[in-house]
Image 1 (tube, rainbow, N blue to C red):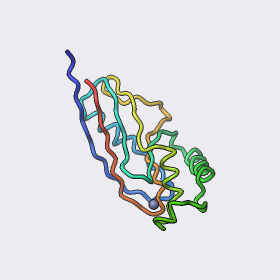
Image 2 (tube, rainbow, N blue to C red):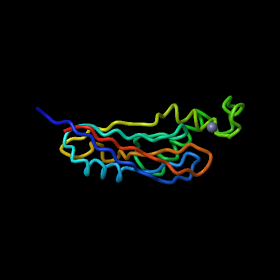
Image 3 (cartoon, protein in one colour):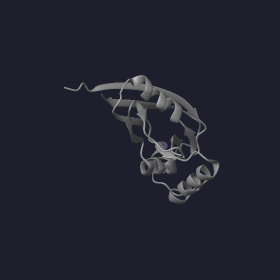
Image 4 (cartoon, protein in one colour):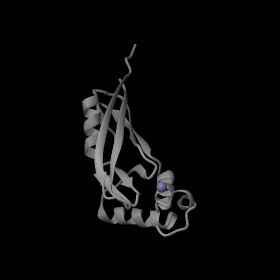
Length: 142
Ligand code: ZN
């Protein structure tokens, strides 16, 4: 019978806001290494409704393209109903976060997180001000 184990790591990072894209690959891989899990999955989750998690090639052209794509999807200066209730000026950030999603799952094989060479794990902070962000990495497996 196999023994399933879980290992949870809390990461904390600061961002500049305004669709700041932060490479978190190294701390996530370290969390996987220190988990002792050989075969399983790693959930990467960011707490917050104006933040997102995805994987991209961390290259200045791609980062700029991604920011421009989000600007087309949910423009910074658009009209947002969220503003009627909260007046915090970040309606676009909530919409972008909802579309991107706040978590991703990666396979873990032979004790390592599986990803492509040009596939970095990133946190995207859409909010309209610098933030401190909490990321939970939960590794589950055997
Ligand atoms: Zn808001």
